[in-house]
Length: 524
Image 1 (tube, rainbow, N blue to C red):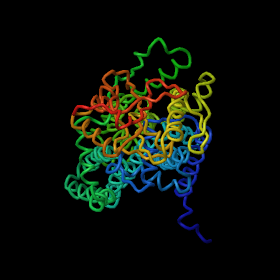
Image 2 (image 1 turned 45 degrees about the horizontal axis):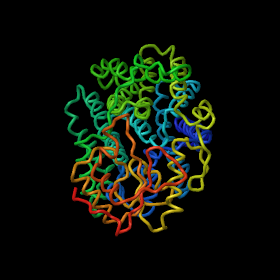
Image 3 (image 1 turned 180 degrees about the horizontal axis):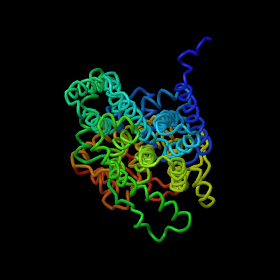
Image 4 (image 1 turned 60 degrees about the horizontal axis):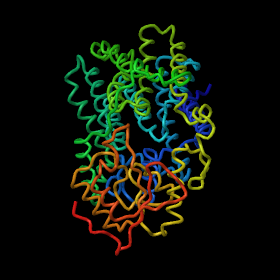
């Protein structure tokens, strides 16, 4: 009898089915609400980067940006999906499919029951929220799977491959590189208990892998003029200011009386995840501190999920809103399932369905489909954005209409337009590139930074400004006129407001005055 070829073995067939499950669920959900909503701030930040890279610009050097990897990913897939917002979301969904598949491959270590795996798949797919940020939770899930593989087989090859993974993920986001170094460093210590003589070699192998994985970034440092300096200037600024605006933790016992009915249920369940994170970390301290290589190999998912959840909990609590909560919850879900499997595997399937119920309840009003179903009629406006028909939240429709009127009716095709201060999505929505490197101005600027922005206005001969002077997080100090007072004064003196038949709260269009009408502006 002729045996089956090795690529038809049970593990590979399982991989094929889990990948197919991830694709069907992820793109099935995308088909339901992939055209609902638009975030002109954070989502627009990524969308602008896609357009800028297509135009030959480099992230960080030529425009304010995340790390280059995610821009190169969505840009590469734009040849298939297009350069529109829906096409970019599809590219993000494809990346999230890899994360969900890795999560399911890790979950398979505790159960191969398809009811369990489907419930876990639905949880992971729903937590890929919002789509433009699904890189974060996908990388966390990939990290869990890579850690599981390392714990199961701590050989030289696997340490090197883990290092390559860390380097590649740092290219997608430098914070992920740091988080993965912490997670895999913890696992390395666990695997070296009783074999400390092997630790230096394993560290060297992992370090060599990191260098190989980070090679695309290193080559950009060497070959792209000006990129190295721009990258480290950005890094120094982030180290001094931080990467996120902090806000209070929404603990469940602080839920306000304005939350009633379904809103109360969704908020209460969602807030419970903030409690679950530290409780899970506390519950896994014993295995993390006491397990050696042999015992860790018997519970690889528990150790891997705990090691990854710890640094990603920092990500969540650095700005505890639903978006940042979503970055840590997928790894947490795998960890909770693994913890119950370790304590008593009898109720594992019930745990999976309980997690699914909590996920659906917590995210019911966060997804586009949920909002469009539950919110009052008129909350969303159907409109065309760069040849794609979207259901746009009413609060974002007015800025889009104003920007469209400015770009098509008022400004000439070659006139430089600046969209300030939190609306980078208006550039790709109007098929424009920013004349300024800065796209997202939320942090208070120093005097020198304010002066540099004014100098850029003059150098680029900006003729039009659409200014959104609006607070963030209810903080008066984060109005644009407070974060950039010199630039705001310059705009008010050198530009004149233009009134259109489209009203939008806190958004004003300004036109450069005629040279003879420009008042003398004192030096800032």
